[in-house]
Length: 304
Image (cartoon, rainbow, N blue to C red):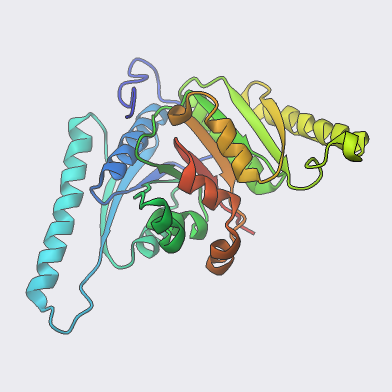
């Protein structure tokens, strides 16, 4: 469900997002998850005054028996999906600055168009295979998240937009800092005034002080997180709460997101850009969060 997607600030001047360029690119395939992504993208565009562009990519059938008629029919259906989505946006009061129909692999075409436009934000739906299917096959949204060089907002079935709170996964990297700043900008658009900064130490805190873990190490970890929270206060406009956890970072972030208003909790993380093989074997925090978060997920890419 998406709440308040339209007309949120109809009586106010659009707010500019300082960390974004002037374009948002929305990828659509006509699915239910894509409809949620559409409502979020239109909402952000209307509230911020940023241009909204729409893309749909389609595949030709790789078969010697598929003639020109089949190709034309596939292209016609793709154009129909794109036109229907554009009409829906306009009926709901949104404004589209450009539509883009492309033939090819979805992730390739979406990323290419985003680069051509100089987009500052990609908005996509998560198709939501079953859990096993997602682990084995991944999804187009995951491919986009890990290959693009711009932030991606992923909307999955059941997510609520706009968000009511923000959970920021912080590993003290520049990627995580960018994710926090972007989440702050999105939160400012919609009046979000609650954020939780989560940092996980995989090994240091798994042993309790009674079992021999040095007290000073725990205290230092807490001080480091408080320092980071103070650094983010300028971007958020308020100092976020902090949570220090032991174990897997994705688990800590997801548990925090589920504590309250889970479908309306925006989770923001950085992406370290692991290769596909590494993600299959180990997973990355961003991959795990995109697959399992109950609400919207914002991922900022590793660009170096």
